[in-house]
Image (tube, rainbow, N blue to C red; front, side, top):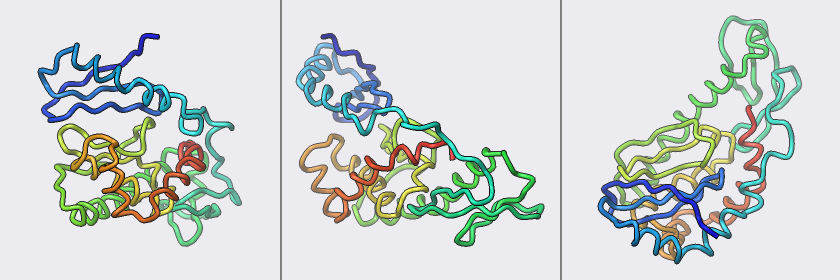
Length: 224
């Protein structure tokens, strides 16, 4: 069976293959790499790609209708825990004090809540990228928060690290795992035994974090 994949050329030194959350396959190759060499490497990884594209927990669609209603008594995830929504009479924005205080005027406007999550992601995640980069002894160009629905994080050929804002719903040990996972690609582009050893040396709960994402990833992907 013919394997379809997209090739992205860059100034990176090594060729890497990724399987996105929509099951598409992308090959990141150094500029000038021949089509024959790319095809040969992809063919050698065919079994690995086949297994990745059939990863049931990672790629199955959401088992329920996404999103929740912004109503009093409903709960939303933040840093791995569910907190209740309380509607209040105020002209101010959303406040968090072990519960979400949501102005009644914002009822039904989920975009405002997503903006709140995105700001919290910048506030909580980006400083930890600096800490983990220092611990690993690596340098990145820029750390960003994105709205990508295909992956939790990525390390670009230009040495930028990008993280999905939905991660702010996950526990901090999971966030730390994703951060270190992406930063480790600056030392080892591929998911080799060396790569996993680097991650495990920094994140003792690596396997626990991976299992948490498998079990709760669909909840993070909900509209809220």
